[in-house]
Image (tube, rainbow over all chains, first blue to last red; front, side, top):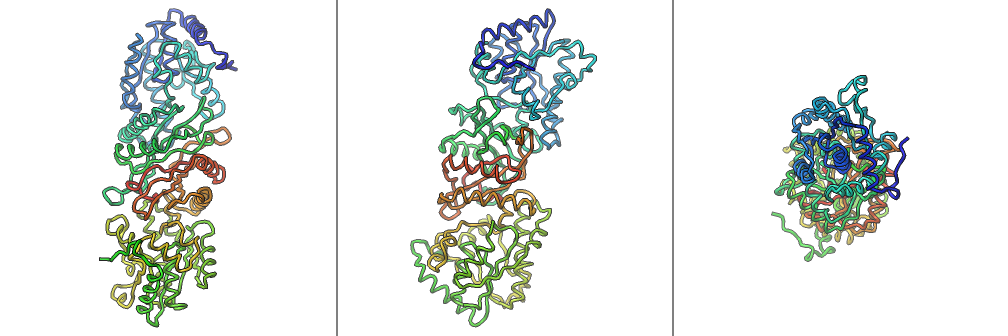
Length: 320
Length: 320
């Protein structure tokens, strides 16, 4: 049973000191490895690990081809400014190959997870010789896995390390006693820029979670533009999560006066404290109108735009 | 070239008198037939024809299984109160058989149209011996056909009457010089109840136009409940058209704490003068929230609800 540190009991400086000590004690003079996605969880873990281990923590950013516009470069550059070297691994072809022909939502998530752990990160772990893996698991992840909302993963099995061989490995999860709000405070105290500590959550399967049906490089490019516009137009709204989904369903539109079956983009803008429950943000109509026109004008093939009205539950925040 | 009668030049009483005279003159002592859908156009034509011809106009309501909740009974009863006998034809099996396995939007519309004209209405025309068909075509239909937005149909060919044999038939379109706003005034002047003259437009393919993907009796039942709730909750909004669409795409939801791929309903509430252009109604958030909860609670399998933000063009009012 994990002992939760509630937000009102969290002293970020003390927490950082304690966790850095724990990482140091566990790793000793060994080396550790972690994957940075640019999200607040993995960013906080990267800086915690760097405080504890310096260059003995190897940090990788896996460019899977399904990140948001400009994201890989921005993350590497932001950490560079903090003195942390992040190695960019180009694995785009591997991810798109794994996603080809996959339409079932669970299989799609699984394809992204498998490619990440088994093929890409597994290879990096084996090549690095590191025996310690730092992971940004938070308490909500643990809760949702227990509740069957997220699926449980045995990390060793995923990265292709035999359980017997895995005896020598250790996974460190320094954030597992806190939730998203706690992680944000810790990230801020670690000196991360606001663009990171106040960053919206972004799902593991990245933009693949925002394409209904088969994921292709073309559809990812479409949903990438739609997400960039959505984030820009909703920038003034202090929502928990803002996203755009490319539907597979085609709806009727008119182009140059003729009937044309086109694409539909769904926008979601969630109010939430910790992702467990959520309600749609009451965005002013003038903003929604401008957002909708931009999506129709700037995203090729789009003829229709909707805004999510459902709460979580029974909806989830992402579409798949 | 059809000469438009603009709304500001329309004198409903004079129009009714003139059109009834034209119908009388054309039909002489023959008999005429028409299909009543319950929409304002076919309702106005039914009463115009009844004024001109009395019982020599045979009016049929085709129950195609894809009408809204309670609609067939309500239409027959409303006309009964006006002294007009409407014969209800149960053709549900024929329509669902024609729709089975059809997923392409154009083919779906075509299946409904074909079944209506060729199978059902064609049979009624031949059995009735009527040589005059009254149709509720309005000027906007003609414009949209010319612009390629609606597809042109040769009615004789559709109902399976050979063009040579068709020489003896005549189609009468008394509303072809006016648009929807004009038809409403004429319908009101004819003594139709407000529930009819102020009725929302409803598409030819009926609820089949509101199901993306294959149409089945189960999906029609789902979208029928969703449309009834949408009309109820938006009753206070004087919009041009209010509708609910059942998407084929599945989205993630949570039921009893577990991940479950569920259905999504899209609501559209259009402001428009004459259907040529449209903008989404700025419905208050409290209403949208209540509508969304009811759809999620009362429509089996629904986990997500969206509201349309796009304008027409490039969207159309209906989804297919």
